[in-house]
Image 1 (cartoon, one colour):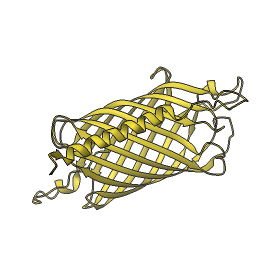
Image 2 (tube, rainbow, N blue to C red):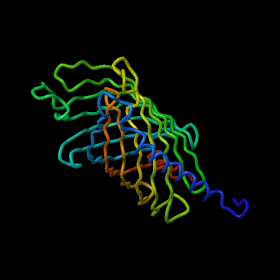
Image 3 (spheres, one colour):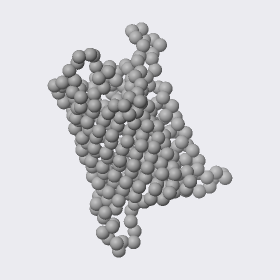
Image 4 (cartoon, rainbow, N blue to C red):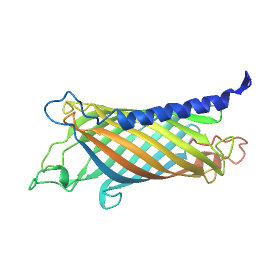
Length: 284
């Protein structure tokens, strides 16, 4: 569509890129900065380098029903020196329209203790589990050649400290992610397409044990992806994560390299060879 000699689709794509750049700069500078008026002590920011690898699966098992699975291994300390997290996220998605789906499921993460964050001789469990339920609402918004995703996720988490015999406590987490895929060597996201992947996600938490750190996390990501075929996509890139610590004053500032493999498959239509039309699932 042309207006005044300008391609509106191209213009919209650039506006989205500018929006994501602004989000990334906010993530970089607005958190973790010490207050000049603070007379007690300077705010501390704790850094770290992480590697997050993940496999994302999305399998169609009914006309509007999908199985979602995520399998993650995350390491820390110069990216690979220590184990950090291992978790599985499982869910079922229902496609209300081609651009709107709802999902619900369970998550079973395991966390490895970072002993440097505790005083010496503190009795600690090396690995602590966490139990979650999660619900998600995903809106897909085509903007010209760009595909924009609005993801709203709710989580109910039973979690505990690493200190031995700490009790499990229920907390709630609310997440909003704005994400975009921008094709580079093609006009559409199709087979053999290289694309730019961008997102910003904010995490808000609540619960009896949450007193000062309601802003749990803000994540900004930029990376490249490649659609190998209709079933497989790969992505890699850099993520900046700013986390508010439990005292509400100090922050974790994490540099994270992400490597992800996405696999989808349509079991439902494979059984119905006579069907002339198939809905290809969206990667996210």
